[in-house]
Each structure stands twice: as structure tokens, then as C-alpha cells.
Image 1: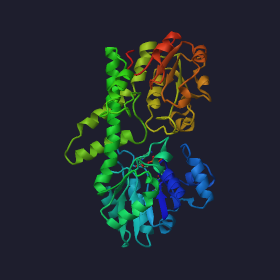
Image 2 (image 1 turned 60 degrees about the vertical axis):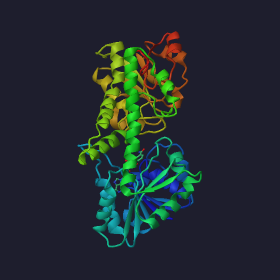
Image 3 (image 1 turned 135 degrees about the vertical axis):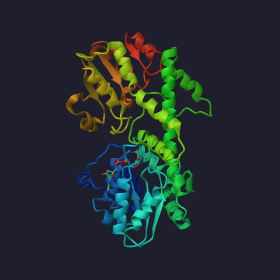
Image 4 (image 1 turned 180 degrees about the vertical axis):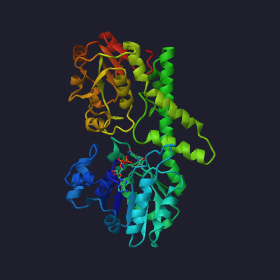
Length: 435
Ligand code: NAD
């Protein structure tokens, strides 16, 4: 099939690469000229494991190309994906200006009927708005499909190539069949393709992300309870996770959830429900707990070192909002580092991939180290924020020698408190009874 994917970010670029890998001819579009010029020269705008190999191969095989020219891409495709950002507006609702701008571009460019597939995360009713917007500029038939994306940054290629499920929102049988044909190669292990209404498809994405965020906020609250009652949340997690009704996944406490999706999608779903006069109060709590959780590490640090951190240095391990991505959007590291800086501390940080992105947010207010050990040399404490695999089994004897005081804040509970205490470290985790 001939496909255009408008938006070449974390979702659009992965979608374009994976669709071309299956043999489709794909044009990946972005309005960002620098991004497209880079991609044309083999420079990827994001870090995502495996994406470089996929792009290189499909460009070489001439199945994948890049452009800033949406009209050209639309004219050369029968299916046009929209994969642009839907950032939160001031009131928490999803801002649809990019999605509708692309819809207008598509309408203006159409020289025949098209299927327009909305992959951006959008509120209930957006398919109708996109359809109206396209039709302002063309009399050709347009079918708008809602096809939310469930990939996880850091495992995006695998998730796209082997999705747990594909959700297709359309009420047209022919369009449903075309979409099933497009996705059949991705579900060879018989994972389901669910055909439903546009509205149900749009809502499915928000419900999935909101439930995942709810699980995290719930466990973070339980972790805070563990701290005050002197229990270990790691034991609680194991104890509840083996109940098949609960399951072991996504119940790990930490320093709060970040990223471009959970925080904004929780707010947007709440906004939608408010608009319809039904109030999802639980989601207000999820957001508030998350904002508070990003401050838990700061509280533990001031408990150990006092409110005034002038003259102190902290070595931060991990900046991205989770491992295996360079994405810093809403990353807990930003909140933790800002608090340390406001209290007068100096910060040295190491992240395997997110340093460039971090510089755009934190600038030269912190020092960026090229190894994790450099980041803690002469520091008062090590603060682990993101659990990259390279941090799992570090050389604690070396860490002990590099640190000014043997103090560790483990924001992801990846280390063993009792063995670290035996080595003479002061250890703080999340919900391990150490408040
Ligand atoms: P992103 O910011 O990484 O990429 C969006 C791209 O769209 C940018 O490169 C931008 O320049 C481009 N763009 C914006 N307006 C344009 C226009 N008019 N014409 C052409 N290009 C345009 O965003 P993302 O993380 O890929 O997210 C895209 C959508 O997918 C969002 O709705 C998001 O909620 C959803 N989503 C994201 C993830 C994720 O993990 N990042 C997962 C599932 C769903």
C-alpha cells in the first residue's frame, strides 16, 4: 500500500519505519525542516532502540522517504496517517490545533478519495472534527479512522511490529477490511484486531493510559504509607502481584510518572468527562498524587542533609523519564534537579542518551558527565532517578570511594538496602520504611 505518515516524532517515525518494513511504500512527513533534512542524511531526531537499522534498510530499499511537503505525500498515498502531537491546553484538554492543521492540509491536497487514519491520541469526537475539516476543502470522499497507538517509548519497534492488539475505529465495512489488510502482517501470532466505533476507539486509548497511571499513583501512595508505618513496599508488591486478579505488571513505585503521554492523557480524559457532566474524580487524585510523588526524593534528601543545600553536590543517575529513551518530557528528574538547585546545591548528571534533550531544558545550570562514575566524584550523594540497565549492578566499592559521604537515594528501588547498609552506605528507597 502507499502510505503517508504526517508527523515524524516518536510515534510517526516508528509507524513509518515499521509500515515500510512490511513492504508498504511510505512517505514520512514533518513540518520541521531540520528534522527532515537530518533524516534525509541518516540522522535520527530521537533515540529509540532499533529504529536506525529499520530506517536505514527501508530508505535503501526505496520504501521509505522523507519530506516537508504534505501535499505531495497525500497525492502519492491512498492512506494518510496523522501522528502529530496533541499537547495539553491550559485547561487540561487536548490541543487539537496540529491535528486539525494537518486535516486541512490533507483536504487541500486531495485529488481523489482517501482514508485518513488518526494515530494521535485525541478526545472522543475528534474523528468527526477531522472529517469536517477535510471536507471544508474537498468534495472527494474521506473516511476517517481512529487508530490509537499503544507503543511504549524504549520498546516502540517491538510494540509496533507485534502489538498486543490493534484498535480500529470505523463504521465502514470496506474501510475496516482495508485497515485489517494493512495490519494483518503485524498480528501473525493471532493477536486481535478490534473493530469498533470511532468514539470507542478514541476513548480506549485514554482509558488504557489512565488506568496505567492510576496503578502507578496507587502504588506510590502505598509506598508513602510503607515509609510511615515501617513496611517495605517491595514485599507488598510481590505479595499482591502474585494474585492473578492483580498481576505483577505496572505496580512498581518510584519518583512519579512522566513522559509525554500519561500526565496529559489523564488530564484530557478528566476534561472530557467534565465536558459531558460526569466527573472522573479518581483521575484528579491520580494527577495530584503524581505531582506530590515527584517531590518525595527532594524530601528525603532534605531530611538527610537539611533544607539548605548550599555547598552540597548531588550526582544524578538517569535523566530521561524512563530507560531506553531520550525523552525528557515531564521527566521527574527535572523536578528533583530544580529543587536541589533552588536549595543551593550543585548537580552533576549522567544519562546514557538524554543529555542533549536535558540541555534544552536544564541548560548549563547543571554539569553533564560522560560516565556514571564521573557524575558522583566528590558528590555528597548518589541519586538514582531512571533505572537504565547499566545502573543495576554498579561497583559499590568504587561508588563508596568516589562519594564524599556514602549516601544513596534509590528512586526506583533497584538496589538491596540491607547489603548496601552492610557496606556502610546510608540508603533511602521509595516506600522501604526509611522516611
Ligand atoms: P512528537 O512531538 O514526538 O512528534 C510530533 C511531530 O509532528 C513533530 O515532529 C512535529 O514537528 C510534527 N508536526 C506537528 N504539526 C505538524 C504539521 N502540521 N505537519 C507536519 N508535521 C507536524 O509527538 P509523539 O510523541 O510522536 O506523539 C504524537 C501523538 O501520538 C500524540 O498524540 C501522542 O499522545 C500520541 N502517542 C504518543 C506515544 C509516545 O510514546 N510518544 C505513544 C502513543 C501515542
